Every structure is written in structure tokens, then in C-alpha cells.
Image (cartoon, rainbow, N blue to C red; front, side, top):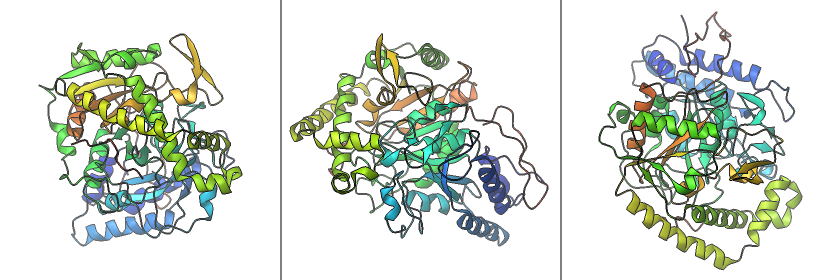
Length: 501
């Protein structure tokens, strides 16, 4: 008997559903691999993945046993049966303290119930195995955490994994789990997905419930999956959709069929390339990846998001203001317990004059209206995910348009204008454009995630995109002499100015 590698979620789910393998065997092998390869504690060996802050081993075993029992009894199980997943440590896990990457939160009471997204994935048969490292309070693009250490890029440990969902992206790229959850305020799903060579989907603002997720900037925050395949990306979106009273901005729209979209042709979709702001400042490898995707899709049309640079600046203002207000009491009472870099950014945000915030929100509505007009002429827009490949951990500056700029804030150069008005965007890993991963965003109008998946599935079928995961050694099961066979190349001003309907 062989267990499919954790990299192949669809194969795991199918085999578990058909009774060919046991969910508990998948979980034991996954936990064993994480314990061997990820390391423990804030100080780790250089070869450690350093993705997880803690494991939920007992819970995972119970969930896997419940899946196996249901199958043995002939009861239906969900489409993600037996698939292991992990979450950024800002998601509530019942019985665990929700850290949100901070030291201060260590003193909080354990969560009383799971985040809505976790509960819905488990209802679909998935098995939670742990929580993942992140930038403190999700304020960063690198996952260099003063309290819990740095999560390196699995493709080159000298480089950053991106952030703030860096642990989520790196865990997928390292082959530890096929699916993770992250959060995205200004690019915190898409940036690490691009730098680590995995899929990272930020759905429309409000498409997925944020119930039980520790917020950073309420009018900008999204949740979404990071994954090694389009199938598990789409299947997780199918599982997590639906109204939720725990999140007042969660849509009342009926769920859209995401897995079904993978089998639909993108013929007839009007596809364009983002110009102007999105065409400036990228490294040659990024430009080559964008050209490769555009050529494969046969598109040369270019469109301009008007005042995209100003949209990015306004997003910065809103993020800093809302984040600092959320943490104002902690900044006043416990300033030395913050990561110094996070504290300084929050303090700066607390000093922003309120008229600036109001003006940024007014501009937000103007920008949204202009982009709605743009999507009357096109269905899909292609844009880079980041301006560069993963920078070195200790790298402070890079050159954009012949100007030396700070690395960390500029990793969101191309993601911030899109999340500013809640557009759905998927970062896809483009094959064979260099030694390090490169991501390209596929962007659509609000609530048009299915169109994004149509295009991505076609690109995958043509060999243009594919997860650039790290192929690990076969893993023996602790109970049987089982192997994970290799697969070739596998791998509270809520919503102000955000009426997306």
C-alpha cells in the first residue's frame, strides 16, 4: 500500500474516500515529517523549515479517526477527506491561544471555538495539523518575526519567504502540507505565494468569512488559501464559502462553484495586461514571466488602472490608521513587548491626521468606480505579483526605476492597489523563468473568482504554471513500511468605500 505524497491533495482525498488508504496514516506521516523537518522553538537549525509555531497533533489524530470511522460505516465524507492543512497563527483554534505572531497575545485565554474557515474545511473532511509563523500582527512582507524567528524561503534559506503569511507559503513550498490558510491586507497571501512558488488566492473582499480571524485592518483584510495545486485551491474555496453572522462584511451571495470552473474553457474571455504602474520597476525575470503568460494566452491588449500609485499610497494610510487604532491601548501600555519594527509602524500610524484617513477613503470610492468601468471592457487582467524574486533576509534596499528603495514595503508594489478595493486575485507560479520562483497575478472583477480559475487551469494544462515545491525524500509511515511516492515535477470602519456590488 502506498500513501500519496502530501503534495497531492486530490490523490489523498480520492484514496481516502475509496478506502485505499487511511486518513490516520496520512496524518501520522505528515506529523512525522513536520517534526523532523520543521524544528522546534524560536532557535532552529539552519536546515529547518521553521514554518510551524505549534502542532495540533492530538486534534489531527481525532479528526482523521472520525473520517476513517465515517468511511467504514458507509457514511459520506467531504471532498477534502484526509487532506492535511495548517493555518496562519491568527486563526482561532479551539483550546489554543491565538498568537497573531505576537508576544503580547501569549497571555490571552485560549480560543473557545474555531475560526469559521477552519470549521468549514474540517466539515469537508480536511485535517488541521497546526499553526504557522507570520509577521507580528500581520504587519510585514517578510515573516522575520522578533519573537518566533524567521521563516526562510524553502528554495534558498538565505532569502525571505515573504509575508505576512510566510509560514503558510513556505509550508506548502517545502511539501509539509498541500494546503494552508493565510490572510491578505495589502498582499500578504500573494507576495509569499509568488516568492515561494505556490498558488495564493485572495478572493473578493467579503467572499470568505473572517469570523475567528485576528484582524489587522478591518476594511482591507481578506482570508484565503495557499496551495500547491489549483484543485485544492478551488476545493477549499468551495468548502469555505457561505454567509456567516460572525463577520459583518461576509457576503450573502450564494456560493459559486470553484472546482467546476477548472473544467471550463477560458475561450471568449477578454484578457489584458496591466500597464502604467504595473509595468514599471520589475526585474527582468518578472517581466519574462509576465510575457510568457500573456503570450500563451494570446493577449497584447494593455489597460491602465487610473491613479494606481495613489491607490497604493491611500492603502498605506488606511492600513496604518486602522492597525494603530486596533492596537492603541497595547502601544500605550506595553510598547516594549512589540517587535520593534511593528511598534514603530503602528506608532507612525497613530500620528496620521484623521483628515488624511478620510481623504484616503473618499479616493477609495473614486478608484473603485474607475476600476468598475475598466472591467466593462475586459474580464481578466494580468499583473506581476512582486517586482523582484525573493530578496535576501538581510537585504535592506533594492533598485526600482533607477532609485534605491527599501525592500520590505516595496514587495507590495503590485498587490496593494488591487486589495485596496477588494478585487479577487490569484498569484500563480510561472515555470522555467529562472532559478527562483516568480508569481503572476490573475485579476478579475468582484465575485468573478471562477473566471480566474478558468484561465489558471488552462495555463496549467499548457505547462505554463506549476507549483515549484521542494521535493522531499520518501517518508516512511511510523506504523507501516509505507512511502510517499514521488510525482514528477509536483509540488472597525468595516467596508467604508467598499461597496463591491
